[in-house]
Structure formats: structure tokens, C-alpha cells
Image 1: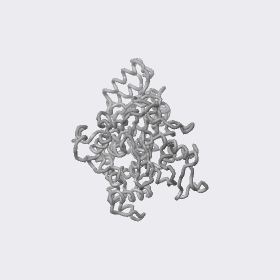
Image 2 (image 1 turned 135 degrees about the vertical axis):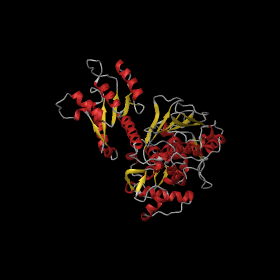
Image 3 (image 1 turned 90 degrees about the vertical axis):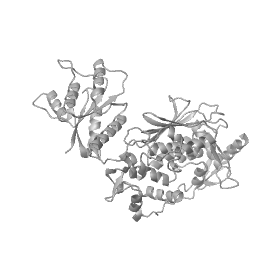
Image 4 (image 1 turned 90 degrees about the horizontal axis):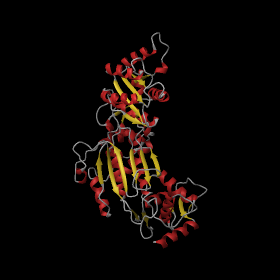
Length: 505
């Protein structure tokens, strides 16, 4: 039998949001199986008073979901609003009470008093929201928690739990094929890919059960649309002009996709916005590229945030680049037995999501289980950088400190030859791709390898397209843009820019 959710608010507020929430619950694959929303406006005419009908429904509700704004609402003869009456009845009858508080500049005096009452009597702490997307994500996390504590969802590590409605057909075989290839190259993964071998591969990684149910980890790693199942499994990246989180924001991106995809995109976001020196590949195949922050340390901080986050939280991993530092934070806490202090020392490997962590290690995204933070510290200190910091409060935070010497423009990027009317970021990426290609003709893969980039979309949009639109780079086969052996070279304008950069050294 479905659980009834009584969705309440002052009638003059949140009418649109109440309807949107009811539609969301009814249309969601998981929630529609367990819940049936109750709304004032959907009820037929009653012989009894409307207020009594609503109170009766609140008394019978399994879950009472309240939206709190700035208005207290109309008052009865005793000075109490219908919403507060419903809240009291739901409390008296033991409903599971959820409150979601709208961020507003001010509230009615009586609404402020009512909010204090809610804070003291709510089953789950109120969660503030600003937009409907935030509200929906907060409701998602709260209802997942409700289903878990009621025993309606599998208990145990989040990543190891079998998803109630997904199956093996929701996974992308091309993504699995890619993983097997890179895992064999990086860690000598013993299995080879074939369509007939997919179940064996997933089973060896503990990502499916005998009934072909798939774990949450399998969806995070290989789903066609990860955010369909986990809306908050994204990474938010931002670059700020100075050393504080304030507007205007220089650059901002939200990246969706699998664990591997969001890590690649976030790492590329950082690498394309910090100082780097790219040499020529003339005497050997060895890549000559030097970033101001160690690539391995940047990757480790982002991988840790994505892999070890709390996926039941509605928060997202955030990567914030300031003029003096890189901050990476994730929703979640350190495992029991691990402290911020112990991260700087040799310590046991206790992954928050162990099923998720192993494929990430096999793909070479983690150097060695249990040594990531100590390696991160060492790599930064080897470059003469200030010792990285780790902090734990409501979220876990990693801080990598940058060098500021030689930066004399507002963006924190090096100044020098102007490339035209491009943005500051485009000037930087054009400079790098021109130096990477030089007088050679290189494939996309060659250029990305030379720049230590992994995200193909980021490379195309952030590097290749601005360089070609600016007239610095051209295709070897322009009439067949999508051919597999496509390569790129510098135009005359690009060669002149390259020469000026070489002379500036």
C-alpha cells in the first residue's frame, strides 16, 4: 500500500511548487511506487468544511511535507492559521514530518514564531532552498532516507545497494568497453570485453546480482544517463577573480555524466585555467608540460571528492579555483577511524563507497588505495608549494595552494602576446594549443596527451574550436571533418604567434 504524503503550505504561497512536487513524485520511477501525494486543490467538494477535511487528511498522512515561506496565512478565531493546525494534527498522530524552508529576506512575525516551533518538532531538520531544483533535490534526499529507515530500500553501503528499478539494460556497453580497455592497460585487468562477457565483467566487480539487478555504483560508473537516477551526481566548477567567493564569477560550469566523465571534465577545467609551460616534442616522444599545480594532485583531490562523497546528499561536489588556491569540497564525512590529521600520515584505506572505488582504481584514476592524500601532499611540496590542507565540517574540503608570482592581470593568468578579441580564458587555451602543436601536424589524441587533458568535449569547446575560429589552427582534412585520422596544424597566423611565444621565453 502506498504511503500518503500530505503536501502543505500557506495556500497563497507555493501553489506552483506544490503541484510540481506532486507531479514529480507521481512521475518518478521509484517514488511513484511507494507514495501518493495529497494536495488541497485536487480534492473534490466535501459535505463537511474544507478545513475539517484537510485536518482529517493530515491526521492520516504517513508523511507530512511542509513548505515554509514568508507568510503565516489567514488566522481563525484563536489566531492560528490552517497550516499550523495541520502541522499540529500531523505531529499528534505521529506522521513523519519534513519541512523545507524558503530563503526569503523577511518573514511575518507569526511565521517566524511558527518556524521556531517547526524546528523543535520536525522529524528531519529543515532544509533551506532557493529554487525549485534545490527543493526537488532536497525532497529527493529526504524521501530516500525515509524509505531506507522504513526498510523499504536495501540497507548497507550506498554504492553496493541494488537499485530498485534499474537493470543491466540501463548501462552503456560502450562505456563498459572503454573501462575494460583502460583497466587492462593500467592495472592488467584480466577480463577482455565482448558483448557476451558483459555480465561476467560486471559480476567480477560486484556491480550486479544473480537476478541482473544493478548496484548504485554500476549506474554511477556506466549508466547512459547518470543524473536520471542521481540528480546531484554532478560536479560544479567555478573560477573567481580574486581570493574570495564573490561575484562576478570569471567562469562557471556544471558537469554531468559518469564518475569518470565528471572527473575528467573537472580536472580539465582546472588545468585550462592555471599557469602552464608547454615545450616542443622534437627530440623524443616524452611530453614536456609543466603546470603550476601537480596534475596528479589536482586529479587526486577531485577523484577523492567524487568517489568518497555521500550520494544520499542533495549537494554536489564543488571545484573552486581562486587566485591563490584550489578548493575541492564534497558532501560527506570521513569514515569512522580516519581523521583530518591522519590524512597527512600513512593510514588505512576505508573507502566510503568501496564498490565504486575499485573500478576507479583499476582505471588508473587512483594511484594506490590508501596513499592518495600523502602523495598529494608530497607532490605539492616537491614543487615548492605551501602544504595542502584538509578540513571537515558539514562537508569535506581539500585546499591546494597556488603560486602567485608573475601574475599581473585580474584573471590570475600570465600576460603576454594578445591573440585578438578572444576572452582571457580563450587566450590562455589558444596559447597552449599553439605551443603544443608547434611546427608539427598532430592528431587530437596527440594534442590532448601533450596537454595532459582527458575530456574530449572540453578540449573541443575550450581549446580546438577557439583556436580554429581565431585562425590559428586548421584541419589537415577540412572536407572530411569527422575522419578518424584527422590531424591539425598551425596556419600562418598560428606560426607567427608560435614564433612570438618562443621569442618571449
